[in-house]
Length: 312
Image 1 (spheres, helix red, strand yellow):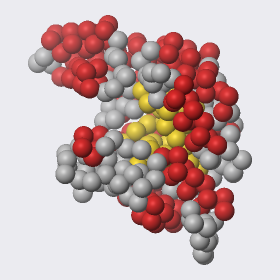
Image 2: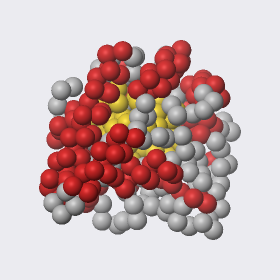
Image 3: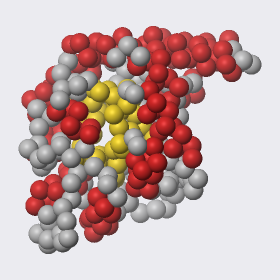
Image 4: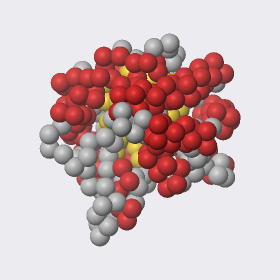
C-alpha cells in the first residue's frame, strides 16, 4: 500500500481492515442533479456504503462533468465520493487544473481511468486527447499530493493537495499477465487502492484477487447487479470480456415474460434473482479472499442495496 496518509474515509476504512462497499452514480446529460442526489441519499440510508463513485463520460458519451456532482453529493448528502477522471478528454494542464479544483472543493478520492474512446460515444467526431495515460495520471496526482508540484516540478502555492488515488483493474482480461503488469506499474507510481471491473465468475475473480495480493494494495471487486433483461443482454453482447452466466440471463428473461404487465412483481422477482446470485458471491469473496470489499455498480438500482447487504 502507498505510504501516503489516508486522506479519505474510504482509505481510512480500508486501513482498518473492514470489509466495505462502494456504490456508483452516473450523471448523464443533465442540469438538474436531483436524481443523482436522491440515489446518493438512498445509498447513505443503508448505512452500508462507504463511498460512491461518480462516473466520467462512460462509453465515451458527453455527460455532465463528474466534479460537480461529486461536490454536491458530499456537501448536500454527506456521502463521500470517488471522483472518476479519464485522460480521454483533457491534456495534462487541464487535468492538473481540475485536480486542484477538486482538492479545493474537498474531494479526497480520485479513480484514474483511461476512458472509453470517444469514437464509441454519442459525439463521434470528437477528438480524444490521451496526452497522459492512466498510469501517468496517477503519477501526476502523486506528485501533487506528495511533492506539491506538477509533472514539470512547478510548485503548488497556498496549501496542500490531500487526496488518495486509485486505479482500475480488469478481472476478465485474457491474457491476464499484461493486465497484472499494468496494475503493478500503477501501484509503483502511487495507487492507494484498486477497483476492478465487473465479474460474474467467482473462480476467475478469486484467481485474479490472489494475483493482486502481491501489490499489498486494497482491492474492491466490482459486481454489477442487473435490474432488467435488456441490460443483461447488452452486457453479454457488447462489453468486451464480460460474460453474463446463461442461467442468470435465462432467469431475467423469464421474469420479463412472466410479469410483463405487473411492474411491482417483476421488480420483486428481479431483486430476488440478484440477491440469490450475488449474496453468496459476496460471502465467498469475503470469506476466502483478501479483498477489501465490493464495488457494487448498481446504477439507478439503489433499492437493491438494503436487501442485498443486510447480512454484511
